[in-house]
Image (cartoon, rainbow, N blue to C red; front, side, top):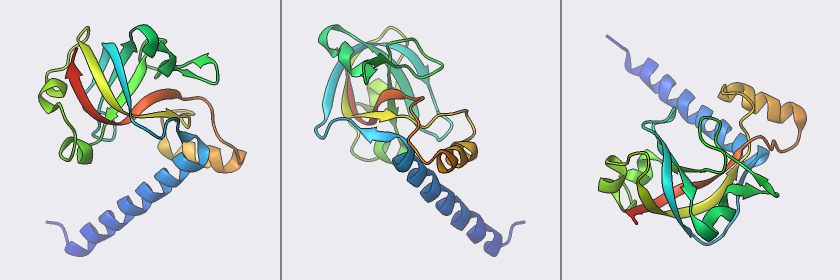
Length: 162
């Protein structure tokens, strides 16, 4: 049996941690690269459901002119567990159950599916190690943005089959 007070403390701590983590991301390397939504045509290279934070995540290898979305400052990027030149895509739970279009496509997504993804083009550059707490400490100690991340579509607002 759990007490209501302990549950309240846990929720308060998780909210505080979430705010600290988002502050760290904005301060240390999460950059929006385009003010308008982008649409990228590509082939699915990896599917990670669910992610560490309950996000629906997958990577695509862009086709044709959309390849430039995988570069940041002239360097081709990738999410570490994915292929070089892939574009990481994330759908958070609040987006999935909110305004996201293409839920049925996302739920049945497989490697080698050809898709069109819509969302915000960004660079997630604060990934020195997997431990989120150490990422925050690392950013505070260095007092500068971290550039060991990758380009991504985050938030991803829609997906269709090509």
